[in-house]
Image 1: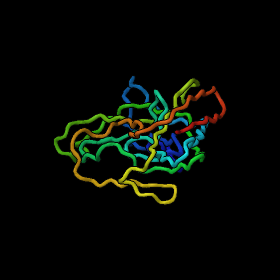
Image 2: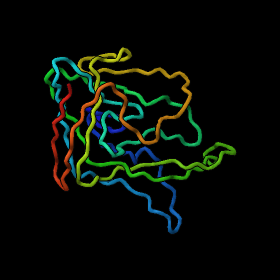
Image 3: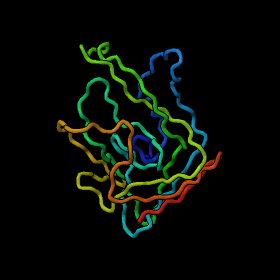
Image 4: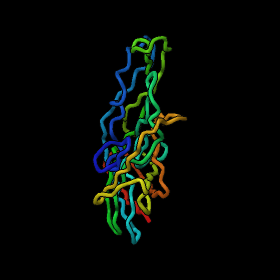
Length: 217
């Protein structure tokens, strides 16, 4: 979620179209499942996040291979997809924060959609990886969720992490590449790590927009 738009990491909007992250799926064989497609949003949920403490708080606003906020039980953004062979991009991490002054309210939105995933076959040898076996990757598109009750979670910090540099109410957190080893980031993004989190219950109707108050301490 982010003041700008993309879910894969933004604080302003939980609903960017993750389907654009994947290449077109190959033609289906007879009898195979139809590839899902992205469906336009029909609703907007606005989260009005208020700093209820007496001091500044830093709201996670953008992440790399993780989302700034989350809707419990739903996947809302793709993470990292490696096709055939690729360098390790490092662990999911916060890329920026948004300062919330004491008593300030900041709004972010969710378009009431979640990921629907599907497999896509990749011919690695045809792409230039001589002798490489075929690979199956996961793609995802966003579709409206059903009416019901969901839990919203927003991560934040009481103090800005040392690696981040503030500029007004925004702070960016550079990350130097250092030849990462170990596991790759997950294919489906989860919420970025934070030392604190605020939650709120969302009751989503069958139609119509909703505003949900959220308080951080």
